[in-house]
Length: 125
Image (cartoon, rainbow, N blue to C red):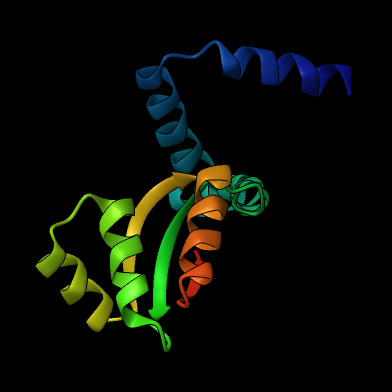
């Protein structure tokens, strides 16, 4: 294992150009392509990205339906988004539609609670 650690340390010190040259030499020597190696190497990173998605910190607030109290929902959307009355009404009537994008979790939950209290059906994505 000590030998592998040394190799990893040496590879970590390579510049981008040196790494590209190394990839070409390995392709020639072993008859493989770098894209196959990149796929294998990128698999663990994909796993890390998937776990990062579970720890999402920003949410999109989506108005799914206005519900029975459409006027209250329009007023709430107007205050949350800063839209004019006409624009807020159009947004509510065109549901499902995002109300706000990339909102921190605490703010998203607060907005969701306000919209649901006004009678809307809301989801966080």
